[in-house]
Length: 272
Image 1 (cartoon, helix red, strand yellow):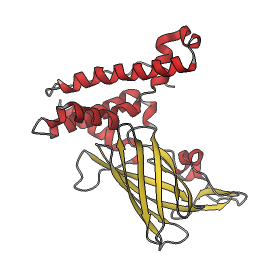
Image 2: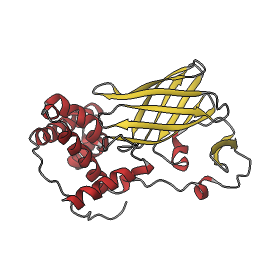
Image 3: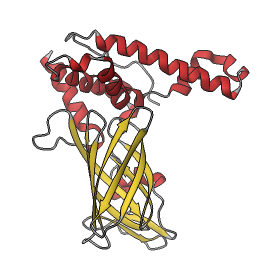
Image 4: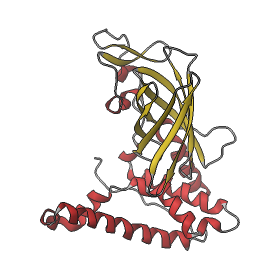
């Protein structure tokens, strides 16, 4: 059991290059942030917590004296969003979308201009999600990432200089095992039993479990050929009910959790 738990911790810590900050414990992780704010490149890091909240810190690469700090959170019905304040007086609000437990992207607006960003992704993986200034491209310099003219030859183009971070979604068993480990750690952490209350279970699922599921695709697979016979409104209603069913199923299991051991068998699936 100890070996299984240790392996689970290692897989969770290793996802997408995120690391445990000193003293933060299992329920907190940090990862890189790449942002474009008003056509300027900002780099930094985000620290996320199990409950869905966290902080973000970024610094302008063109003007190092400008730095921004903010916070983000997940709230049921409101989604993932946050706000930020910069040292030059600028402010920003943003929304983000999770690709996995510790990877995602987002957009927003600031008093300086539009904003786009990624977290937990390498520079190469970030390019499709960032709104780069016209005629500009990302390139790895001698020390750090920078914006360069798109036509300018780059001595160290991104794929060669910055290896892509491992994609946790490519290994379903590892991703689900890591998510399970986080959920169990949260349930075991609470000594007063409040983590097993319906409200806490709902928050835990919204922040940790539900972002891993593509409910529309799952509903379409379940309905098979009949999916195309339904109207758009009927499809949306079916997806919503499918989501409700899964939430109730998992909520019941988590509410009744009493330190049982959960073990995942090796994945039997063709890659891709």
